Length: 69
Image (cartoon, rainbow, N blue to C red; front, side):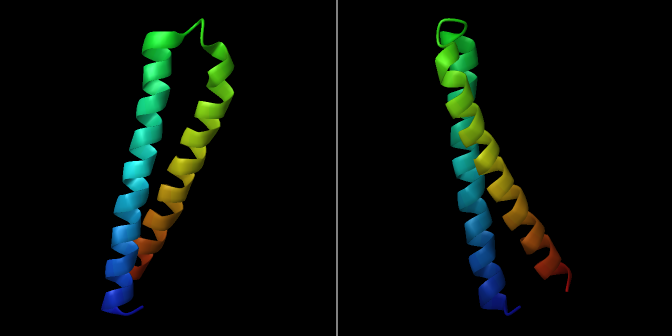
């Protein structure tokens, strides 16, 4: 993988981390402010958080592998 490709992957990882953090903040707000009354929101927000975290983890793994060699 070229240096340009690694830099682009690094940018992607940072973006995905930000998106995962935003979803985690939504989940935190739900837990802190709206449960138990907002229980109906839990599946949607939880799934979005899981999806965002998995996307970050996969991209981060690719970045780490590319940086190793």
